Image 1 (cartoon, protein in one colour):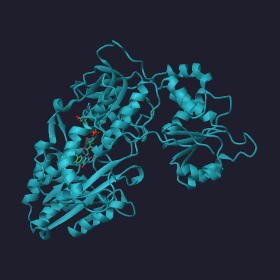
Image 2 (cartoon, rainbow, N blue to C red):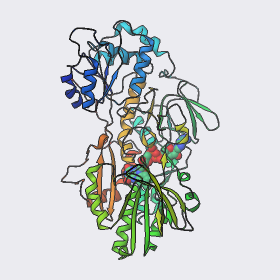
Image 3 (cartoon, helix red, strand yellow):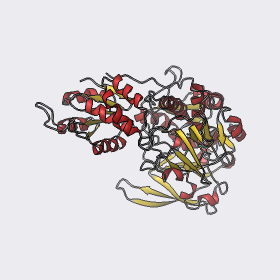
Image 4 (cartoon, protein in one colour):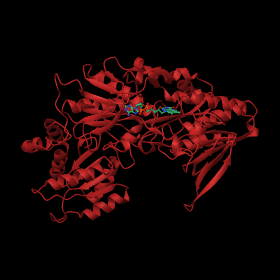
Length: 565
Ligand code: FAD
C-alpha cells in the first residue's frame, strides 16, 4: 500500500487490503472511502470487509463506487456530499488511486485555480493534465475564487474579515506579514477591543478591568481598512457579504471570525437580575468587578457556580472563578462557613481526563460540592433562588430548586444568529470548516477561525494564536492558486487558576492529545505551577496585545504539511 497525500485532508491509494487498515489508522486517517465497485477484478477484497476492519478501529467507511471511465456529474455531487459530511483526513482508494484523485480534482476545481489542482495531483503521482478543459469548465461554477482586480470597485477586496476580535485581528496581521500589500477589509462594529482572558483576573481582584480593554482603533493593523459596521448575511455563491444596512461587499477570500453569542436570555429571569442580588458573571467586562465585590463581601451561605452545556469559550473559566473565590475565602478563614457548589450541565469536571486528578485535589481542598448534569434554567434574583434541570442516570430530567447567597453564572453559548441562519453553518450552527485546514467544507474561498468555527478544539484565544497563521498561510496559497499547505492540530490551552499564584496549565489538541509548549521539567501540566501563574498574570496580556494581534508567530508558526507515504 502506498498512501499519497494530495492535500492535508485528502489522501489517495490504490486497492487496499484488510491488513492495511491498521497502518492507515496509524496515519491518523478518520475516514476510508472506496471509489471502486465490488467484483471489478479477481481477488479484489469486498468493500464490506474493509468497512468491517475500519469500523473495528473507529474509522468511518464510505462506499462511493465509480465505474471506471464512466464518471458522471452525479458521481461528483455524491463525492462532494460524502466528503462534506465526514471527518478528515479521508483516504480514498480505487484500483490505482486515479479515480479517487480525479474525483478530488473535479470537486476542488470549483474553488481552486486549475493549475493548483493539477500540481497537487501531479505531486501525489497522478498526472491529470488531459483533464484541464474539464477542470476549467467546472471552475466556472459559482463559489470559485474570483480573479484579482487591479483597480476594482471600492467595495471589493482581496480579503474581507468578519469580526475584529482576537481571531479577526490576529489573521489580518498574519496575512499582512506574508503579503504586506494585500487589500484587506475588517468589518467590526465595536469601538472597544477586549482582552477577555483577563476577565477571570478582574473577577478575583488581581487586574483592574481597564487593562482588559483598548480602543479598537488603537489595535487595528494600520495597513487594513476598518469598516465600522456589522455583517448581517452571506451570499457565498456571489462572493459577497451583506451588511446590516443592505450594502454588499465583495471578496476574493473571506474570513469569518465574529466570535460566539452569550445567550443570557436563555435562562429565565437572568437578564433582570445580573449585576445585583448576588448574581454575577466573569463572562462580561461590566460584571467581572461585581464578582470580586461579592467574593470579598461573602462571609457565609451558599455560593453557586454554574456551567452550561458545551461548547463554551474557555471551558475552564467557570471553574477558575470558583477556585479563586474559594481560595480567597480559605485565606480569610470564611470557607468553613460557605458551601461552594459547582453545578455543571456536563457529566465530567473537565473535558480532558488527564487534568482531572489535579483539579479534584482542589475540589477536595475547598470541599466543593460537585453537582454534575445540572443545567441552570431559571433564576429569581430578589428571592435568591435558582432552578436547575438535573438529568439522572436513567435519562430522566427533574427540576431542582437551589437557594444561594452568591451565584456566578456562565451563560449558555451558541453561534451568532447571523451565522446559524446562514449557508455557512453546519447543523449545530457553527461555520462549517475542515478541522485541519480551517477552510469551509463547501465554499473553498471561505475560512473561519476562533469561537465561531466548527473545529472541535477548545474555544480559546490560545487556539486562535495557532489558527490565525494556519488560515493565513492557506489563504495566501489559495489566492496565489496553490493548494492549502498548512495544518492546525487543534491546539488550545486553558490555564486553570486553582489558587492565587498557581495554575494547572492544560494544553491539548484534537482528541485531547497533550500538546505542552514547554518541557515537563519547566511546567508540569498535571500539577499546579507557579511559573504558569506568572505567565498568565505577567506575560499573557503582552503576548495577546503585542504578538497575537500583531502577527508575531513566536511558538505559533504554522506546521508544514506532513508528507504521508
Ligand atoms: P472575539 O474575540 O469575541 O471577537 C469577535 C469579534 O467579532 C468582536 O469584536 C465582535 O464585535 C465582532 N462581531 C460580532 N458580530 C459581528 C458582526 N455581525 N459583524 C462583524 N463583526 C462582528 N482564552 C484563552 O486563550 N485563555 C484564557 O484564559 C481565556 N479565558 C477566558 C475567560 C473568559 C471569562 C472569557 C469570556 C473568555 C476567555 N478566553 C480565554 C476565550 C477567548 O477570549 C476567546 O476564545 C477569543 O476571544 C475568541 O476570539 P474570536 O475572535 O473568535 O472572538
